[in-house]
Length: 542
Image (cartoon, rainbow, N blue to C red; front, side, top):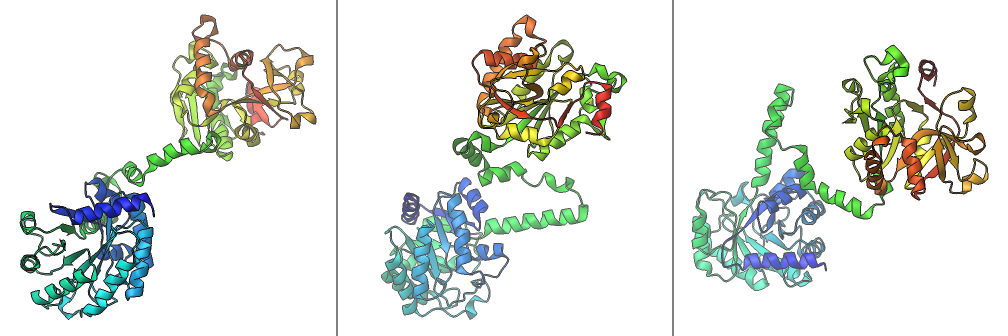
């Protein structure tokens, strides 16, 4: 039996035996239970009326006891205060009662209240005087069976006396209460449908504190609470008010939405979605993910460096940066975002600079580099690293590159903390007489390279032909655990005056020089660096 259940059972027993008046608040699902606990209630009433109502059925045992039990489990898991279940008539005979108690203890429910009416029950406020009461001896047998079935001494059974509801009077109420006490009940709940508390006060005077007495003042709600204190009642149950309050709020909101057909009239009357997340415990899950999930399972993000104009494109970039030049009817950046999305990357940040207001695609985290005209790529990279979520692995790429999604997938799935993608089809760049960032690696692309961890040795535009193993495509993977360290290296580089115009290859070379292992993943083609007007034309057929 769990430690938490033992704590809850003891807490409820202490409420029953408290020298001062205590209160329980109704709840009917997990979120209402959390709300009641946060309001300061020391215990919760699992109302039969409210539990059936939230299922949309009548309070006539139309919801099965297993359905009630399932909802109770959600309520118990969401809270640390004890729950007293309104167990109706025990859902059957003594045998059902034994099984109910066993299942309640398993779900850390501290107590159950059963009423002395016949199964299936009818709500006490619907023609109460026409409702027959259970045989006293038979009901006592249920109490005894429940007490014998409980595994922990502090689990409580509250016997609910319905004599006043059925019109039998004080003598019958006292007789039944005494029989239930002798059968082992831990408290009695005396119920009344009158608008004044006369019946329950008369019972309490005659009862003489033989057991704690619980009341439900739903009908005699105008009675000052001090009256209950003065008469020595143990527990007051606010039995259905969270449900009734929520119904009123939902009805008003639904009517407004139906008539107004917009959200303006209701938004200031409902809690923000963030409050729902808070009540659900979303923050705890985020903390648990950090603790238990490997970083690579937390998802991956992308950072697109797109602050430059792209002057080589002439008039095409007069009023927009290169990344927003139209390719096949869509901005170049839109193609990049689509390729990233296709790999499952939804968290995308873009560093913008020149004509930054033109970079306005939706669902992007926009980071401004207002120093774009007087600095190089590393300034944009640093601003980007400072503006992203450090908990996720990162793919860095340029804002002027079209590519097949598999290139990013290879890097995203790699286990290397730092990695780059290298195109083995580098001869095409040489033949086109295009300046490129060539890579020299620990091993050339070959059949053996598929089973060997390859490391970057150097990137540059002037590597000797015999040492070139491929062309760097502008993709750089940084594991979440390395983001802060890489940002630190960039900061130190930029603090040196002659490095303000440094580029990503300069950073990669420095990382290698410092002993960092940068993994290399070879690919062949399937990308296009848009550097000229001819590239824009070719991009339309990419």
